[in-house]
Length: 212
Image 1 (cartoon, rainbow, N blue to C red):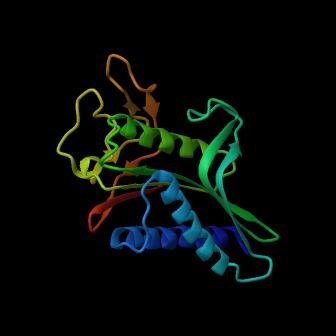
Image 2 (cartoon, one colour):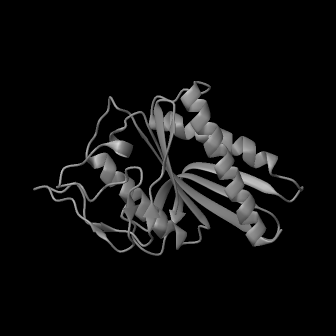
């Protein structure tokens, strides 16, 4: 199988799994009360679909939870030459392997850890950009929440307004994001790519998916 075709099929797996997960959560077919459960349910759907894409005997789909990626440089997330990723997918045959790193966030309204949650989103995106430069073919960031604060709040405090991924917002590559409080939660961040933030609203849940 040509590498380009393999990558396309892997994208189909992720996109289909995302659609199924979001709709099942929103309509009650699945219940996830925390980030661990969200990760487990998404992993189960990915594995089920991935195995259906094993069209030939040589096609293999593999999924790992909370596994490590080897890096040649220090990541913001791990401060080491290894970084832990929420989900790592491998779709392979005898000739090639496509690797996918996925970082997940699940923000509950009753656990309103703000504004640090918004910083952590950009930190995850920054790390996914790093993974992509270290033998990872596709990277995705996926966020689910029951709190409209993240996708449609009118405005944020000027101290943390840099960390803004509300629906319709854009990020320009190279822009420095600063946490301007007296004791910053984290160091400045700068991303390598442009991003358009487009949310999916399904019933009373909100979902953000970024392909990095």
